[in-house]
Image 1 (cartoon, rainbow, N blue to C red):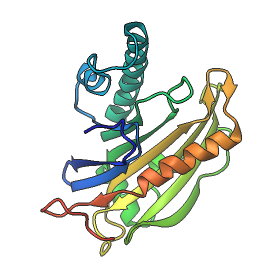
Image 2: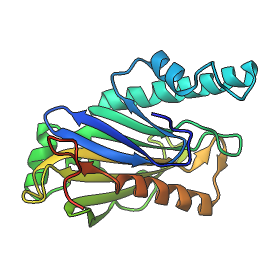
Image 3: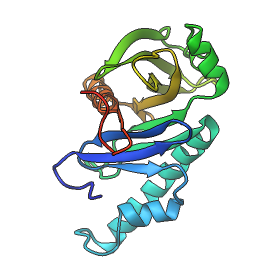
Length: 227
């Protein structure tokens, strides 16, 4: 798949015990299966041939991508993640501080959701931010729950400005509380010591929200289920 064109790119995947699904990614975003080796990801997304940048800049880009992929891979492993969606081309000299992680829902989360509750792992109040905001939403005709949380501080008191939007996704519209996947969209509102402008944060939140809303389950022929 070529992620550097101006055309949105479908990214298909298979969740363990859940079935096939698809996202449509914006230009310069890529799909990383959680089990793909880091170096293979780096070579695939930033090849050494056909590049328009010099070798020194290529090395810098590869190093930045390698660090980002390792951090996201660690987060994916810790939370049962199966896929990572992330920007791979710099904008304005920097990598966009946002990503989307797709996670299998563990049994405890499925039970809580079936009982009408937000799974415990996502119900913990944010640090230094507003309470979790829960709303009902839809991916096409599939009913989902949207949970927005903003952490202003890390547990040890460091400023982070971390915005996360979690979508709780059932396997079918007919069983809306039968949780299958959790889609976690993250925007980092602070790069180093500098907080991003609020307008930039809002644009990034709208971007990851839009990516999440392209989610569709696929049937046995690979066609999207629902509108």
